[in-house]
Amino acid sequence: MKKTFSLLLAALLLLMPLPDFANSEAEEELSPLTPKIVELFNNSLVEMGTKITQADVDLSLAQKVYVDVNLFRLKTDSHHEVTSILKEQGSVVWMLPIYANGKTAVFQISKGLPVPPNASLSEEERKRIEANVGKWTIPAFGSEEGKTDYYARVKAAFGHVPQGTLLVSGQPYFRIPMALIPGDSGELAWIIPSAPISYEEPELPTVNMNGIDVYPYHETKEIIDQYDTSDAEPQGSPLLIPLSILITLSIALIGFMILRRKTKRTA
Image (cartoon, rainbow, N blue to C red; front, side, top):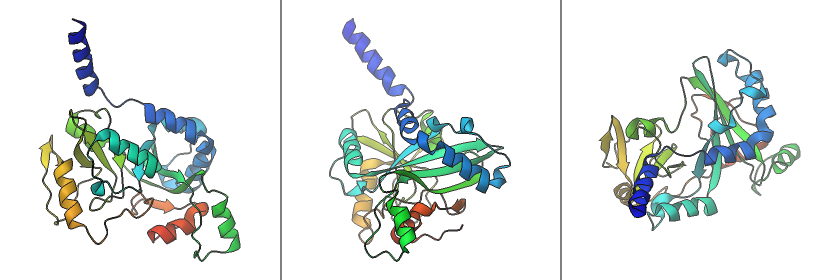
């Protein structure tokens, strides 16, 4: 009887939504940035049509995205092993949404990195960047119509966010943030990009789940690893906010973003 109950409980846990562990982590790590987020929102995002206070910044909504690890070159599909590799070798970017008037303000939060030796920066710019090395900073933020949620297509496909789902970005072919969904066997089973992918090559297998194209993880990994030889490595911590909604970059990381991403910015 106890064994039967344990099996039923385990099955139930697999169907439960994703717990709020990451949200608790975000609240603990990012709370010192709340005043800066309010300042940037109120001074720069006039199109949101409102002003906010610190009480309006809900850090529990922040979504954790891993970058800087090429998953398609890993020899393992194990959810546990891939998670460990992401934590040990990858970098973390938090995406924080603030909803107002049918729009979303998105703040990208990541840790500052050292200045490259050959960076063409003034002494003042170099000092500003160096002062933020290892600290959580806001390299980019912007706004767009509607509700931004990187888990939205996961919820549409599965009806909820499956236990153990991971968000990653900067991967070959996909580039944009995407969700990794584990299967019952303990290995990664599915990939769901945060937006539809329109590339013609390589042709990847998909399964339609409630109107969402879902990519089988192992087959997709094998095809992309063979196809993508010219640009197989992730390109550093990516600018996850689409350029269409980008408003500005924080001064502390302007030099880094130009050098690592060569991304056009507006101020």
